[in-house]
Length: 268
Image 1 (cartoon, helix red, strand yellow):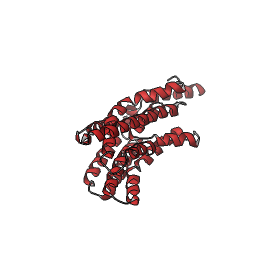
Image 2 (image 1 turned 45 degrees about the vertical axis):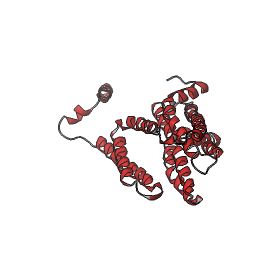
Image 3 (image 1 turned 90 degrees about the horizontal axis):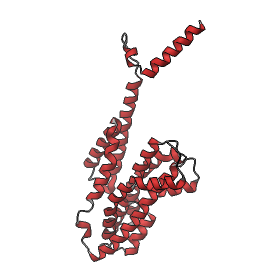
């Protein structure tokens, strides 16, 4: 793959994120409309999107604020919900650890579920791209701008149409997350992790402060790691039986052996 310029990498990241942007738009609209029904001022909702930029946490924070809970509970709950971002950051760190702290701070701030899905897939295909961080920035910044625009629209239209959040627009976000997850399930360890995490999230949905989400993440990771370890162990297991080793060798392996045999014969 030819190395793209900074601008081209940035534009490519934004372009590849476009399907996620479309899916997240109704989610931002609903959040703005939800804020209009709480004691929060409208500018509080926009400020939250500008400074927090984490949709699920913003929904939870707005809902908890409306019930009058203390700030400690509110902060603890949103922290737990957002702990998954640490896993995202750990996954992407090998590709951005050479950058200075200002770059990493910006990329960490714009890292969302959607940006992680797009960027991790890109780094998987192009692990050595020196402009990969510009691709990352294009993806994250396009999501950020999109979130601000639709939050503002929700704040304005939510005041005019108070029941906007009850129209079922949140289905678009569910469809977006399904589109994120399904391609990852092509590999067995990922599929096992997804099924285990989904099942655990359903079974633990009654746990307080969204702790069921954290439990589902931990169980999903554990199941995926066990499946990956078992797959690697089976792949490394030596074969037995007459002739079985020959049948399992790839053409490159056999070609390499022939070269070694030829070299050995020449030396003799």
